[in-house]
Amino acid sequence: MKQFSIALLMLVSAVLFGYDFYVVNSESQTLSSVDTESGIIDPDFAVLSNAPYAAPNYMAILDDTAYVTVTYENRLEVVELSSNRVRNSIYLGDNVLPYGVCSGEGYLWVTGSGDNHLYQIDLESEEVVNSIATGTYPQSLLYFDGKIYVSNTGFNPSNYSYSPGTVSVFDASDCSLITTIDTDLNPQSMAVYNDMIHLSCTGNYIDVAGKIDLIDPQTNVVTETLNLGGTPKSIACFEDGRMFVGNAWPAGVYVYNAETLDVLVEPNDGIFLGGNALTIYNGELLSVDAGDYISNSDVYRYELENDSLLNTYEVAVGATDVVVKVETSSIQDEGIEPNLPIALQAWPNPARYGSSISFSLPEGTNADRYIIYDVRGRRIANVHGNTWDGRDVNGKQTGSGIYFCAAMNESKTLSVRKITIVR
Image: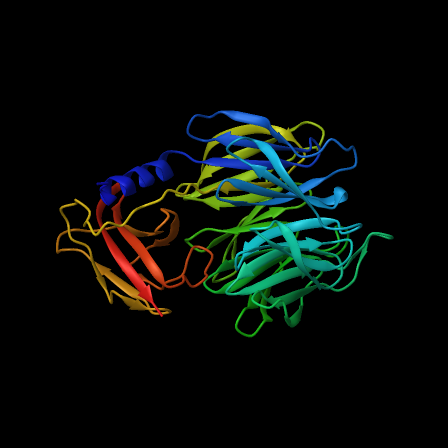
């Protein structure tokens, strides 16, 4: 009979000591893989196209599958990561120019920059089931709290000009348009911190500098704007409230405080390199530097506790996106309490959907954080403090079901408690 404590400790060890990430290379038309534990790099892990005009751009990874948009071939490549082979190609239609991709509500969502539409793809059949009109030249998108946010850049490819930017907001359950939000010029990537959407607006690369718009998802209006400067595009948030923003051209990284909007780091400070694409995972920043788009790209890996550079990985040419593969493992709950000596308490337990859960340990025992896992073994939340608000790392309210809370002190697991959320 499998002990849950052993399975969980193995999972924690895997998260602490290594993970795999993948990089889309637009110029090389390949997917690169990097194993951070072994240091093994495969710059041509999967070939995404052989056509000279193709341009792989962005991807989403779900379990063992990567979904990569190939813009000028108007399709989505489905890559099986365990065998590094392209398993399927989903053709979206002539002149669609697919760009951004995300998952939500059991579907994939893809923006079509060429025909100004949002595409809904069924994950089971891997077929397009719906398309919805957006604003002009949509690119990035975000799934949050049951809604799909689409940034409409307003780009006009005939003369390289920009009309005013907008964000279209759709109900992910029925694909209906909820509202359209006016934004600053050339809206691009989005990230969520403390239930606020931070939107990078790149400007026009000439005389309109970049800004960060803060969108309140409750009212769907821009409530504040940070005049950041430069040409910000990619954006990622760290759990301590720092927002990392990559400059589109030339590469560079800004950092600002999500609460005060104070700029903490600018590209010229040289603290973080890269910035063409960013992602944050398990306390680490992965920052892509595509360089001159002729030589191979670099990915810089930083420890964010002290902002130190851990490694540099050389991948292929023209890197445009970096995504971590979050390992999943099946944890069987057989009614056995973890064989750990310290009892972690959770209250209320069961908890109602949308309510907070408080954690406590015996007097004299201290945890520096709590980690929440779902039943598949995926880490869904890091809790600093003694109360979990029921939201995952993306700020989305978790659904009803069984979860596990691990009380941690540095790398040591003190105790584990099963918690249940009910409707």
